[in-house]
Length: 137
Image (tube, rainbow, N blue to C red; front, top):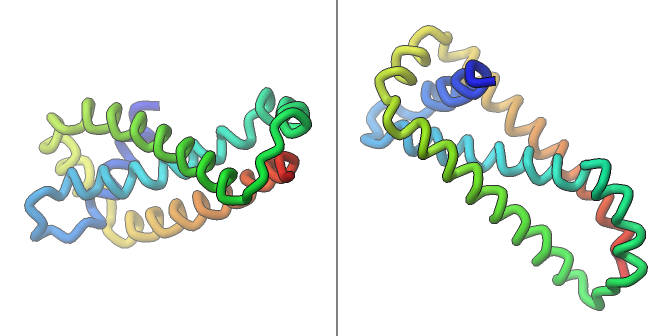
C-alpha cells in the first residue's frame, strides 16, 4: 500500500510546475482533494451506510436541500482534514525521496495518470452520492 501511495505522490509531484518553491506541498494539496473525493465516495457507497440510509431517511426528514449539501460538505471537509493530516505528517520530511522517485516516472505518464485519476474520482464521487437520494424529504 505504501508503494501505491508513493506512486500517487510522485506522479502528482512531477506534474507540479518545477519553479514553485513548495512543489511537494502543492502536490500534496492536489492529492488531498482527489483522495478526499475518493473517501467521500467510499463513505457513501459503504455497505453499512447504504443499508442504514433508508431507515435514517424515515426518521430524519430534512426540509431543505441545502441541509443535504451541508451534510455532504461537512463529511467531505472531515475526510479532507484526516487525509491532509496523514499525508503531510508522513511526506513532509521525504522531499528528496519523492523527487528521486518522481524522476523515474515519465512526465507524460504522470500527467495522464493525474488526469485519469481526477476524472475517475469525480465520476465515482457523483455516482456514489446518488445513494443519498433516499434521504430526500
